[in-house]
Length: 240
Image 1 (tube, one colour):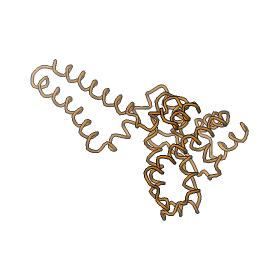
Image 2 (cartoon, one colour; image 1 turned 120 degrees about the vertical axis):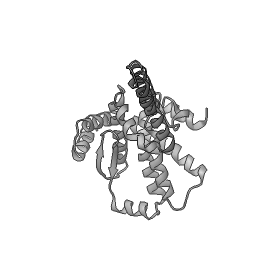
Image 3 (cartoon, rainbow, N blue to C red; image 1 turned 45 degrees about the horizontal axis):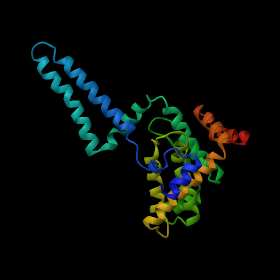
Image 4 (tube, rainbow, N blue to C red; image 1 turned 60 degrees about the vertical axis):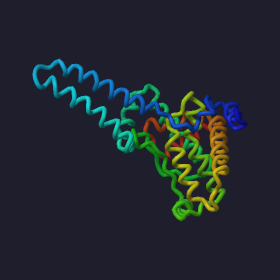
């Protein structure tokens, strides 16, 4: 086990070594269900009399092939369906609330203003607003100080899931967001520097969340009840 993995494990991350490996749980479950369902329906259709029993099984069976081909060529087209399907997992709503509340709370603790958030299927996010920061991002002029803050906020959702669950599901979007910030920093960081920043950001985000559990839980409840941003901040300050 590496030193960073050991530090994350000591912090309470349940599966530190695999933290950044994208989860295929939702994708696999969706594809398995599609293939299983269409296969079952094709068998039933084969019992129909005449030409229906001949053509329908092929027609139904082709659905799986289309889905698999789409997933291979353009996986983004399936994300809405996969996101909707993932809501059937018992832990889905709690995961989303925990993940997004972590982004919100860490941004608040680091002094980044929050514009809005969403827990809707396929639209989960927390929006930050800062005119100066926006200009730095879009112009590719993010300095080290601002990059550090944004990196910690970006990794907060991943860290929150890692502290609670053995497997993290929502890390892909977080890592993509962090990479976008890294690509807009000046000076550009080397690959080793990017990896070190990512690990540090996960560690700091996890520490902030672990040291503010009551605030995180209060914020999760408020966000789950569709509270406004102001009401969410009030929930944090009441729990402090």
